[in-house]
Amino acid sequence: MKEVADFLPEELAFFKCVHYAGAANPFGRERVLREAEIAGVSPDSPKEIRVLKACQAVGHRLAQMEARGRINLSSFKGEARYFLRSALLFHFFHLFRKQIDTLITRQLDDAEESLEAHFAPEALTLLRGWGFGIEESRRFIALAYQFRRAYYFIFRHLVGRSRCMQELRRDLWQNVFTHDILMYDQYLWNRMENFSTLLFGETGTGKGTAALAMGRSGYIPFDENENRFTHNFVNTFTTLNISEFPETIIESELFGHVRGAFTGAVKDHKGVFSRCSPNGSILLDEIGELSTHVQIKLLSVLQERVYSPVGSDEKHRFHGRIIAATNRNIREIREKKIFRDDFYYRLCSDIITVPPLHKRIAQDPEELSDLLAHTVARIVGQPSPEIVSRVLGYIESRLTLSYPWPGNVRELEQCVRRVVLRNAYDINEAPAQASTTDDLTRQIQDGSLSAQDLLALYCTRLYEKHGTYEAVSRIAGLDRRTVKKYIDSQDQVY
Image 1: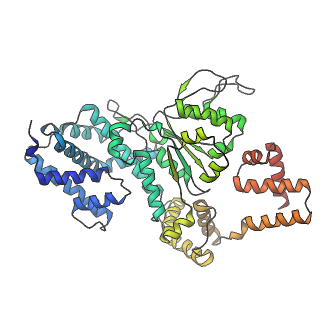
Image 2: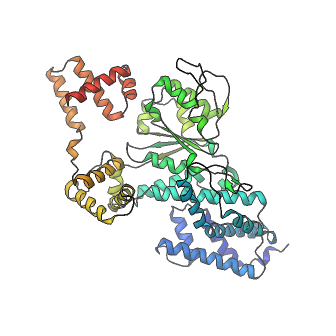
Image 3: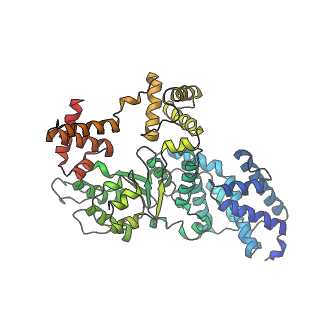
């Protein structure tokens, strides 16, 4: 075996830089600085040029070593082996990056099964030729696939150049790979089920998009015999909106039930935990609407990783990861004791806040143009600078850039559709919360409201805020059918 002394000092310094570049968060400043140093360009150079030149520089160094017959890991030991290993993986990742991206886009069009990884045999041969072990090579194929999926969904789906959106992308990457990807590689690549996440954000900010990015970025093993990954990432993310179900049903939707468990249970039913794949994630949306009773049952899943279907004592193991989301803020959650303390502390291994649209635009007005381009392309199926310019011009002239966007990104999407259809977006068409509240106060003071009218208006205000009959029923202490009757009566009035 060759000694460390055979590794040139200048080569060691170069590969150290490559090592730290590969370990850095791709949405952080350190990654930019390291890539620029490797490439020999300014950190302010366009990203495409910086990455291309960095890849070329690493490839050139490795080619020089190969020409001297020194490219196998078995020829090195100590830190020389450690940093060369990182450089080889950096080079390997960028060699097959486009082929992995092709697999991702093909897989998005075929949600039924995991597709064949055509690049994998060549990739495995290359890794093993460099001295990586059989199992280690398979794992790095899987990690490369995971890295590209995470970047794909975080970068493409969470658009925006504002500081708060840059922070959000960094937070999401750390949620998938931790702040230290080397630690993740060594200890946690198959243990992330132990880290649940709590997403905060106003209604319409894009919490579901953030959860989707995390949920589709989990580690999926590679099956060399089948030449495909063991699961299709499209099917590894499952969503359950808590507020859509009354408390009598939510346990069944979470844990499933067996035939005869209750009246109407004519056959076995699989809950969301049963439907989640071993490498998958579950988004429990509107988790703030979960009753204390169900919190206790869900707590055992978070602690013990086991659950039982309603009406059964049989224990089932849950192997996925839990992501929970709420439009309530953390102060409200804590001060109003919406969560039990033990449930909260089990749920919040990580806390991520999705910023409101007005904050994003205030930090960087160009954020609006970015979002419009992204939204228009999704609506019409292709980029359209013409439509973007038309919608942006309307917003700047009619709404102004100071418009607060109370419905956030979801409202912006509807604004685009309305302007495309009618060349108009009348914000006065939506009920104004302050004016209706003032009107309600005035009618109470005047004594012009009956008890029935008062309840109807109160239920309607709660429904406008929380969005579901179940939430209104819980807060107002009324039966769900009564709540619906009151709200429907207001619809008829207006």
